[in-house]
Image (cartoon, rainbow, N blue to C red; front, side):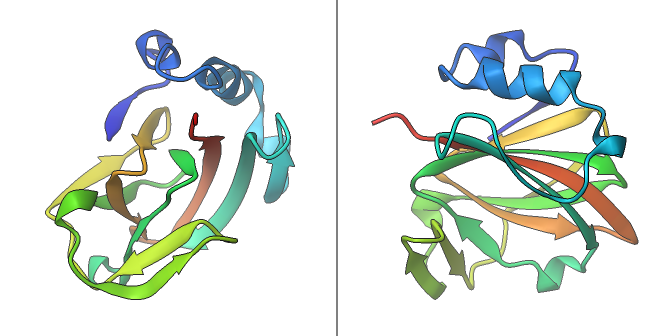
Length: 150
C-alpha cells in the first residue's frame, strides 16, 4: 500500500508502465464536470470509476482483494478512511473470489486504518486487503483500476 499526495506522484509513476498515464488523467481532469460512471483510458488495461457513496462505519466495511488489478483510490469530496490488512494474513473469505468481477471479500478485520483527504491518493496492490468507504456523510471518489503486469 502507498499513501501520498497528488503533488508527489513522480516516484510512484515509475512502478508500473500505466501509472503515469493514470496520474496524468487524474491531474488533468476536472472531476466536478465528470458524472459518476466508468471511463476507459486504455481499454480493460486502465479504467476509472467515479463514484458517490455515503460513508459507512468501520464495522460495516468488508476487506476486499483483487488479483488482476491494482487500485488507485482518491477522494474528491469528503474524507475517506480505508482499512488495511496484508493479504498473506487474511484468513476467512466471506464471498469467494469472483474472477469476472476480480474481487473477494473477507470476514477478517483490518489491522490498520488510513484517512485519505482530497488531494491525496492510496495505491492498493493485489497483496493488500483493503476495506474502503469508511467515513461520515457523502464521499465522492475516483477509483483507478490498473491491470497487473503478467
